[in-house]
Image 1 (cartoon, one colour):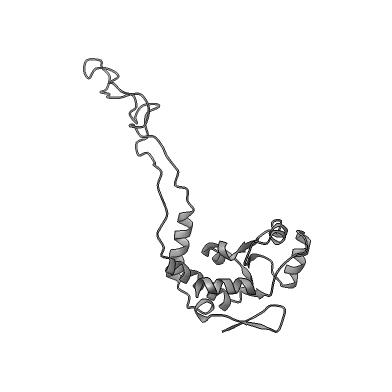
Image 2 (cartoon, rainbow, N blue to C red):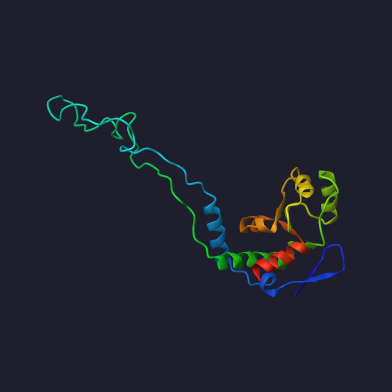
Length: 201
């Protein structure tokens, strides 16, 4: 299989298993859900009646006071008492096998190719970290918003992109299913494609 390089007549050979894989909605959904779940902190916590300080003895005797029975001043019914169903820290992460994760990434990339949302360039670099320079290059490629993927997070390119809305520069090592699914278009350098094939093929 071959992909055309944007802005030229040359093409690059790519692996069918990575760039022409059938789209599996169920697999992609599972991996995206697991990725988002893994980003949750899960640090929400409240104190139940056992964790609130104080309340070591009965506030008054069981009978004869006219008051309702009470065993502790830290009852959830009392002011400053514990929370009835207190939240506790939890781990939201879901297990996804490495093979499934790689298959989902390949499935998403293949769908980007089929929908003409993947653009291939020889390289994308700026002489200095100026937003204007990068914007001129992106206009030539008719690229308004999306993801730029290179082998390394090149400093000047990253700095030049920070002030452009809806344009994100990442390295191959930082690729994730959520960014790929949500991107309008994706620009990949030929070097990045080679690295991706080594990773996924």
